[in-house]
Amino acid sequence: MKISKLIDELNAVREEHGEIEAVLQDSPPPEEMITRYESFFIVPEEYRVEGGNKIEVVCNIRWWPY
Image 1: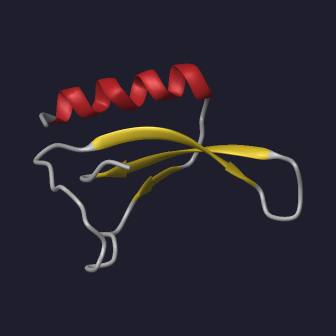
Image 2: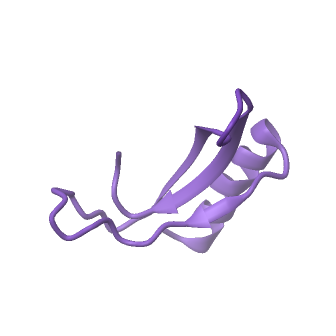
């Protein structure tokens, strides 16, 4: 993925979700079946905050899909 495309994707996430955390994820465990991709997935995902009903959105950046 070209850096300009990455910047465009991240700007689109920021426009929709505001100034949220972005996480460059480590590789999944080796026993997990994954398909490797040459480009990145830039995915805003909702997570329930521990101990409550609040939901937080985090932008995950990784090279495999979920």
